[in-house]
Image (cartoon, rainbow, N blue to C red):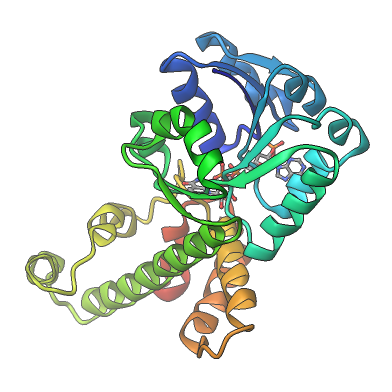
Length: 287
Ligand SMILES: NC(=O)c1ccc[n+]([C@@H]2O[C@H](COP(=O)([O-])OP(=O)(O)OC[C@H]3O[C@@H](n4cnc5c(N)ncnc54)[C@H](OP(=O)(O)O)[C@@H]3O)[C@@H](O)[C@H]2O)c1
């Protein structure tokens, strides 16, 4: 397939490389062109305007930071002018209502839209083992299945546009809950002088264990949050999107509301672009 991918940040870059490596022909646009240029080494075409990428394909994949970034790249007169007859597949994490608004804008100019947010990060993108959750029609799911299958062993059709966006936020709420809970327990264990190995040995064998704990433990023990897979800034974005959507339902969100200022303080310490496990610096500051 010939594909355009807009947004070569952390995940966009990995997805572009994966798609090109399994035989697709990929053209990318990134606001900061210099960050996309290394992709030329694996045969990917880099252009300097989004409309140049859109014009070359029937399928436009979005891997942008948030709804504001999508508006800045896709909902411009130049991009809208070339969207007729194209399908936009939105893979970033945005809210249900943002996804529905985007669908309306794209359909208004004769394009087609579905969402396909993903769970997993750089390693999963590189190996085609992301969880791809599609919000769209059965027809779109079938038509773009070769693309979804390039990134996922088992892409899933969740429902109409918006449903996959909500599911993605529900999953990311768990990222925030798990890291904050683990950081707090590890902090107590360290300060109380309990051996971390003993804590982990019991945790691993218990029903409380989550694989994310094991994954993040080395970062927390060394306080090394460089080379992020997923940034603190984007986790805060997702927490805020979840809280906004949940406010429309009768859900008690005080546990998640408590995590928000922890993320804000982490960002205020200059760790917004760091791996989100950097919240340990606020939960358990260096003594
Ligand atoms: N990283 C992960 O593991 C992961 C996993 C699942 C979902 N996601 C979601 O996927 C999306 C991308 O994540 P990421 O980690 O790749 O983020 P990232 O590294 O921050 O990349 C963000 C991308 O958006 C572009 N962008 C930001 N603001 C813009 C603006 N105003 N105008 C134009 N372009 C703009 C950036 O361009 P520049 O390079 O010019 O800044 C970059 O291409 C986010 O919604 C994130 O929540 C990420």
